[in-house]
Image (cartoon, rainbow, N blue to C red):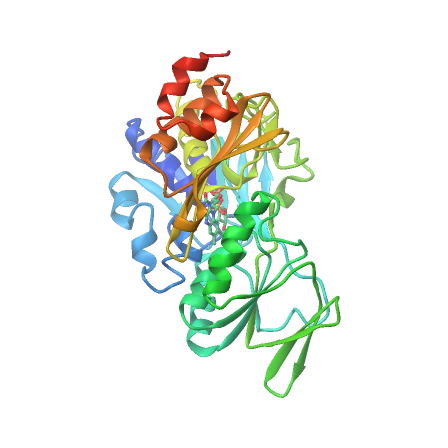
Length: 413
Ligand SMILES: Cc1cc2nc3c(=O)[nH]c(=O)nc-3n(C[C@H](O)[C@H](O)[C@H](O)COP(=O)(O)OP(=O)(O)OC[C@H]3O[C@@H](n4cnc5c(N)ncnc54)[C@H](O)[C@@H]3O)c2cc1C
C-alpha cells in the first residue's frame, strides 16, 4: 500500500490549483498524491462549453499544469482510479480495482455530477451531458455531423452550449421550464437582453415547457414536450443542473446534507479531512450563512486555502463568490449572492451591449453583474460586497465615477 501525507480525492479544478499551492508553499517531493476517476491530469472545466467545445483549444491547452510539473515536484497522480471506499478510521482510500492508498490528511474534491433526464427514450445515444472533457469531445463531434440540436436548460451551461452550436451553423432550439432564460440569476431585463442576442443568432426558444419523451423515427429523433409540441433534432444536450458527488460518503462520519459540511477553515468533522470546490458546504463569512458554490473561482480559491491549511497555516476562507460566462461575443461576470435583495439598480446601455446590474439589500450591495463596463465597476463590485458601504441607489445609478461613492456613504461593518 502506498501512503502519502496529503491525498486529494478528485482530479479537477480544486486538485489542479491545490497542487500548485502545495508547490508554492515548498511542499516536498513524494508528499502529495491526486487520485482521480478521469484519464486526464487536472484541467480547466470552463473551456469545455466555450473554446474547447468550439474546437479552438485542445486537451493540452486546458491543462492546469502539464505532466512535467507533476514529475518535477514529485506529485503522484493516480488516473483512471475511481475511489469506491474511504476508510476514515484507518485513513485509506480503496479504488474500484482494489488499489489501496493511505493518507494522513485528505482533501475531498469530487465536484459535481450532472442531473440526467428521466423520461422515456433519453437513454439513447443522441442525448449528451457536459461535465468532462470526453463529453465535450463527443458534442464537438456532433457539431460536425448534426444540423439540428435541442439544448435543454437555460442556465449558463445551456446558454453557452447553445451559443457555440449556433455559431457553428447548427440550428438550435432551447427548451426550458421557465418563462425566460436563466430566471434564477438574471433579472427580467437581463433575460430579455440575452434572449434578443440569442434570437439574433437564429436560436429559437420553447419556454415554459419541458421534455416528456424522446421518440425515434427512421434516422431522426423528436423531442416530445409537455405542451404537445414536438421538435425534430439530430442530437440533444441537457444542461439541467448538477448535484454534489457525495454518494461515497453517505455511510461515513461526514455530514453530506447539501454537500460535505466543513468549518470556516474548510475542515470536515473528521480532523485532517478537508473538502473544497463544488462539494463543500461552508459557512460563508460575508453573507453569514452556509453556501455551496458551483463555480471555477470558488474551486480555485478553496483549493488554495485548503492546501495552505493542510500545510499548517490556519486561515478562514473569506471570499466574495464570483462567476464568469461567455456567450457569442459577450463576456459577463457576476459577484456575490442576490438572495434576499430588495432593490436593483441598472447602469449602462443594453442597446450598446454594456450593462451592469447592482442588487441591494437595505442599501448594501449583495451582488453585481457586469458586462463591458469601465474597469472601475469591476473593481468596486467585490470590494463593496465585502466592505458593505451603504449606497444611495440614485447616486449609484447616476454617478459618473463609482469610486467617489465609497467615501460619500462611508463604511458599515
Ligand atoms: C462545461 C462546464 C463549464 C463551466 N463553465 C464555468 C464558467 O464559465 N465559469 C465558472 O465560474 N464555472 C464554470 N464551471 C464550473 C467549474 O468548472 C466547477 O465549479 C469546477 O470545476 C469545480 O471544481 P471541483 O474540483 O470542485 O470539481 P471538478 O472540477 O468537477 O473535479 C472533480 C473531480 O473529481 C473526480 N471524482 C469524482 N468522484 C470520484 C471518485 N469516486 N474517485 C475518484 N475521482 C472522483 C472527477 O472525475 C473529477 O476529476 C463549468 C463547469 C462545466 C462542467
